[in-house]
Length: 492
Ligand code: NAP
Image 1 (cartoon, rainbow, N blue to C red):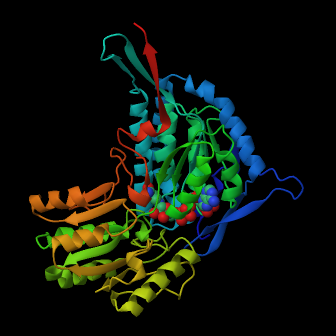
Image 2: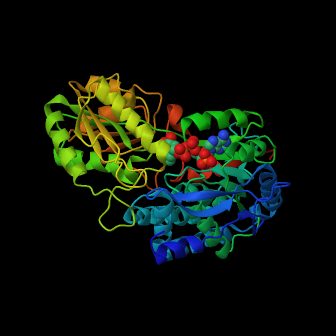
């Protein structure tokens, strides 16, 4: 580590498993407590060690979450809301040091991390407002012979599993509605980026969250920790954000106990630039949709379909824009492109680009990993005339690579955009209202960015269709994922 501030923010993080309100090491009968190292991907150097939880720790956390559930469900909604609001305020007060912490473990530039802290905090503000608006229903039965009364109740203890790419926001997007609804929970952050979650758990404790409501398990053994919980019967809900591959495995495990599930899975977002698009807007939107989070976002534009009349100019302007972006350690001033998360992530991007070029794509910018410094860097890359056979049009790239494919007609662009098993988000750039409606109604995705490269906001329902997931996070419907509806038939 290079500077005092960096050492300080890492030291301040509570480094234990949070179980039943206490921080403790991993309980390892026989072989002593197990730990694992968290790494700074910009230096490929360790930041600190954390407990590596196993099945016994998971079952202890489940005992705690299960025991706390009835009491927590009975806490007044206003009290639950106030805890969220205090945590929101503290997240914003500590925005700078939490941003630095996130940059150290994940790599994104500090300015982007600050943006994520604000975005993450906003989920708490949004759901504190929802906590006091949970309602039910009352109606006369159609035959007039009874009353139909519905009430909303917390679904019960929930297991929350989050990915490394948005270490704080993917947590608050689940924890916010779970607290608002009155659910206890166990959260398992990704092994690459657990520090932000531990810091957040400390903030929630200080904000007055009762012991056992939030339990945190850091681990490199996700299967050993999560599968016994999903098969136990006391967990009633899984909320997962991560890859489609792991999501499918977990859905199969959830079938055992018929668990409620929310699945935010992988994407393969198309970005369509129509012949009447405003090119300034399209290039800016494409750069934002591609480069946010170093391209490591489920919402990243993975494939850019550009009308043949604009493809040359669009590609050249995008290359100039991305080429001007400074690559480096996220803590350095002016850096806008940090490292990828690890060697496997960088090597996957490199392989996909090599494959595309071998198939006939033309590199206009970048095209090879940066080898002359430590860390896992890949430069902004633009590929022109990418053929349909290139693997990166089918697989999530998860890096700063923009493949451009020209098209001739709207029907062709729509067919190409929808030709994927994923359906998280699509982007369309057009100045024509009729064409905009035509595309937005036909694109097979849970979200559409219309003349806009960023769709995420806590006030909107975020989620996908097809193999991109089940359920929605955020917006008015976000809390529904943590509530059950009970109907009472009245003979009145
Ligand atoms: P991942 O490999 O699926 O991991 C996600 C989480 O699942 C991590 O906490 C991981 O733990 C855990 N996990 C892995 N194997 C598991 C198992 N057998 N049982 C229980 N948990 C397990 O995905 P990732 O590489 O971290 O994240 C990138 C993916 O997330 C991309 O596909 C991206 O599109 C998707 N994503 C989707 C959204 C959305 O809202 N739709 C948002 C962000 C990211 P370990 O860290 O220990 O492996």
